[in-house]
Length: 60
Image (cartoon, rainbow, N blue to C red; front, side, top):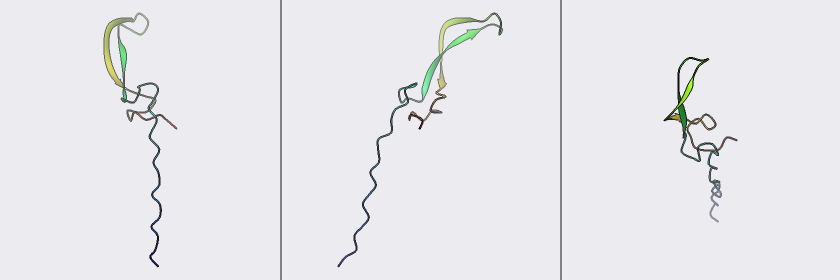
C-alpha cells in the first residue's frame, strides 16, 4: 500500500480593507498654517492606510 499525502490546506481569500479598499493607500487633505489657525486646501496627498498598514488586507 502507498502512503497517502496530507490534503492541502485551503487558503481563504483575504478580505479587502474597508478604509483603503485593498489598495493600501488613502488620500488626505493638505492642511496649511499653524495648529490653531490651520486651513484645508483643495490639494490631496497619498498616505499609508493606518488600518491595514499598507497591506490592503482587512485587520483581524
